Image (cartoon, rainbow, N blue to C red; front, side, top):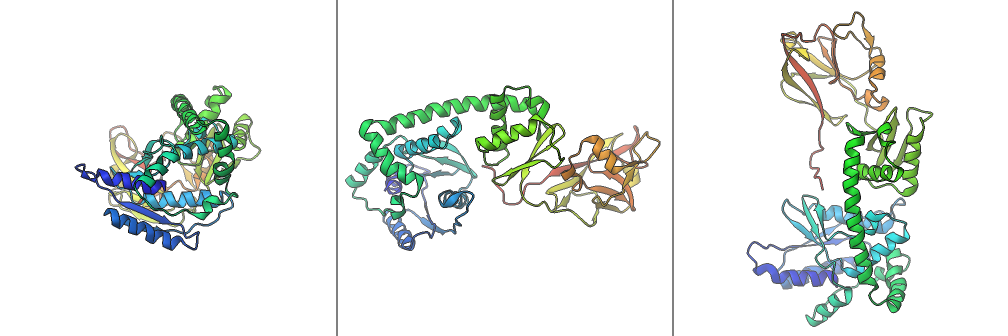
Length: 420
């Protein structure tokens, strides 16, 4: 009903110059009648002269998040593929939906970020997501629907009380509204207050992150200078900013415990929801969980164009400089090879009388163990010349008066990935 109301109301706006409207219906395939519902949507859109696309997705009932959450994730991933730069996805969430969300988050023990509920406007895929009906109660939308003679389909699963939201909607919320008729409006207002508080906490977190972040990680000794509530706040902000699911309160306490004392093993880590957090010395680092492909083999490089290193998600390139990096003259007419650690490599650093084991250099520099195997080694005619973007070996180092080439190692975003 609410989606039909939104579509019908938006259809009136097509007279506005530059306003273009199209609809997407996502068929989850979870109900026997889902195909009929898709045809119903196509017929309604045809009657309004609105182009409609039906997307069919497969939802796995994942134990980690449950069917509802899995369906929501797959649905929004599908919708994201339809949003071009400058476009807005509009959904029909209303005031009662917001109140139910706040109540559910409260029962889950959420912080202010969760109690803020659904934002009326936010970045989404290549464009934005808007919820223009968020301040309208359900009964107002139903009154509009009946006045306009709209017809709609009710999903029978919305009556299944095994789902938490349905229990709140059909049992708990009616009891609340019988005692407090304005409960939905008041809870929605509480969400706005929580959103303001969340915005202020984000401002504090941005400042604290600037204080604690070193490179891509958090320095534990700097994090420890903050009061405990601000430590939790900046950890949540940092983790969200890295694109990972915010950890639960219990997980956050485990992360803080990891910062309180040195772990027994150098590979101490905590995993959740696709994220993997590790401690190494005085740093916390965050990566996607799962096995990391170990780079192997040898790659020949011309040194002129950037070299993609697929197994590491990085690329190498040269930047010309004066008096630093690799001596350009000693790279002319030679064969460059890029390899990865096999063990036993040695390098004599400029100005030092002896060669050093690569293992010792990496340990002294504090390179985390899980990054060492991914560090590319540059060979010139089978002799080790440079170790990633960290060291240059004699006799390939440029002198102060020589043109040089500095090796730059940088991350490469996967093709087709859009930032929200």
